[in-house]
Image 1 (cartoon, helix red, strand yellow):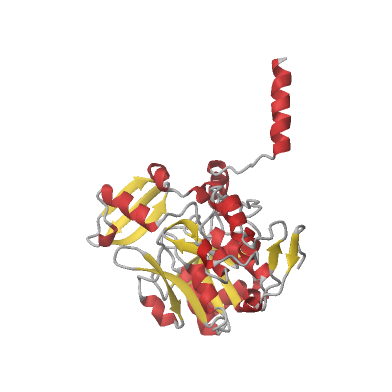
Image 2: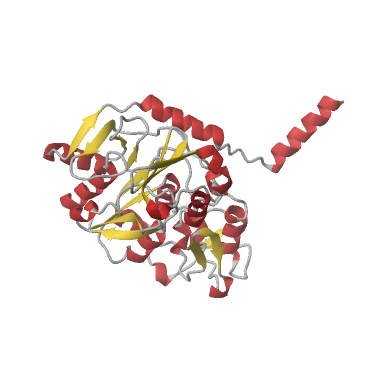
Length: 367
């Protein structure tokens, strides 16, 4: 890999696959996490993807709140956290991205959020032997997310594993824990998590070798679980009685065990949208192997954007086995959502030079 200007390589046996980095400007060996804290977390652009928890001394705290740090753990100055963070030197990506094939699909084997195509992709990948384990986000009785290891398709018949939770989950920390113990793994994540994975794979060959399938979810924003739970409960919608949560046509919808529904405009939830979501412009998970979401498909189906040859091979196997029903995907609708996300999440940081030029221009106008 190319060493960025200002960085020097060091040896670091605990991460044998990583050409580790240490920031050379501060010899106190604590600059790595401070850079991440200053440039990403304190700047309000952290996506809570969790990629930085690769930290070998476990200094980074990822809980149901903004990312925090425990300096007492002793930063080693390796620079790993900064090197893999998708929001450090952040350049937003947007649009539909490149894809091999686009289709609307519905699983004949599983029940999911819409067409259950995320479950089907992972189940088929397991069946084909493409992956040994898939990391899924399950939910407890209060819709609190947690990560589970799925090794057989039958496990995906549990509807607490399938469906969207709209809350942050520790998928990346779990990936870090198991990466050396498995031969191959598939993960499911929001666009920011997929971007974190790609940064990780770029810097650490082990992850490129072992993460065989990355399924990205269409996403406008995500929430801290406790804030989402409290916000809805205050309005009479207790998630402990829910069976499904969904976002459609600008509304957050909670479906309860008795069949009733609670609906609220997503605009009214602005107060609990984390700051890191406000700068994200990637709706369609451009960097995934396959992207999945309900937008652009008829009821009961999922829109699927197949982006890699691995995903195409899995998709073709599904068709061959008769595991899915297909229909046409309306990509113009997906594109509208991609454009809308850019509109509501502007990110155009100005350099000091630009600000000086603008100030000079304003002064000239006054004269």
